[in-house]
Image (cartoon, rainbow, N blue to C red; front, side, top):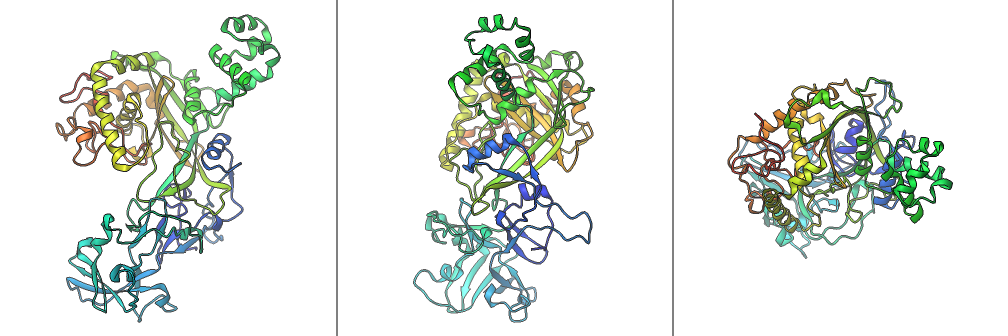
Length: 589
């Protein structure tokens, strides 16, 4: 349907297959991949393809970019399909501005060739039914009013009292005299909308699947109508793969190595020494062990990225980049460290060039599926498919820049062992347990280091946005807590560009200033003492995954956060009111 235009990135993040959209003249549901053009541009990212293979069981998934907008206004667009949805409409009756309005509910089949009913315009009803697995369907309006076993087919009306549009002010009435408040449709314990029929209108007709979940009332334009499941990777050199390749090339010599001492002796050969020069002995020994055991090199996405970031050479980034997708340099310590405030920081890395690839693999409704701290979904997470038999997935690539901050591992380990931190983490675990029980999901507590890094990243984003030239909503985070190594990346990126202007990456030189500003913002919130003394497990507003964190201090745009603004606690970063001993950093002067 050529009745609207979206940016390529929106097709991945907001309006992908299965999303409910309001087009200029219609309400629709975005079609599955089977409705997309065939001549799409392929995006090559082998590491992301391997992740998708493990998540989806598609043997060799490929990545293709959504069709771009035409270069010229008169050019024929290559669009993606959309289906009209819902199929029930409300007639725009003449009510003369009365407080109480009555409008007829009609089905699409009752409309004339001009899409009108009885000569009057109609608008799609804003109410549909859905389930967390992504299924969505029209409400059985007749069955809702009359109940099971009643075959009445007389005209239905939607009566509205007041002007708020609240469910309590809406009722559905049949001309036979029966009436039912729409508020009852939201009472899940009564199962008023019946069992989900497994309908998947975005995939076309006759695509239903078995589903036993109760249907829930859903407003088409609500924020919980579509939760895309996006997997992303940074195009960084995989040191694990590289060392494996070098070891394999020199296997005739290295096959006899079983210890560091034997490796040291063997490296006296100039050929071996030159081949292994860029790798640590531990990396080489691990590669040898992997090859001898026959195990694969499959590692978490973030583990590979962290190794590449930590392996960046020292410099200022003024050398000519060899890799157009990744150019990082560890900033000399003398440039950025000026006080004891940053004693907990090990290194600062400038990412002058980076490439991020994001792929859409499915979606849910009503409830979002959570990723783990490695940025990956569980393989058993239920998701709605975006094609009948997917063999490829839509993806986009962003190019930009970033700043990576590594914390000292020994400092984090000592911090975790203090009694005050243990007590605070116990409180956060209780909140996590209450959330798990409330949501009926399985997810492990991410751990103290992750909450520390995550909260620090949110505070730094707010400080960096004041000086780097990008709004906070365009900055994003990536948290690394892998194998006893800890760091955070704040970056930005845009599609269809070769990079950004360097405003963010240059702020690495002033990281101490930003750290001091972040700690000042985190030390006192406008909602203190309520925010600072928030008990996660006893939350009256169900904020089970927050410690000392709220919209007044720590929460940022959800598009910037990799954990949907969960697992945050200022008390682990800086001293706050009533809790000054669990902080990793001291109070700023």
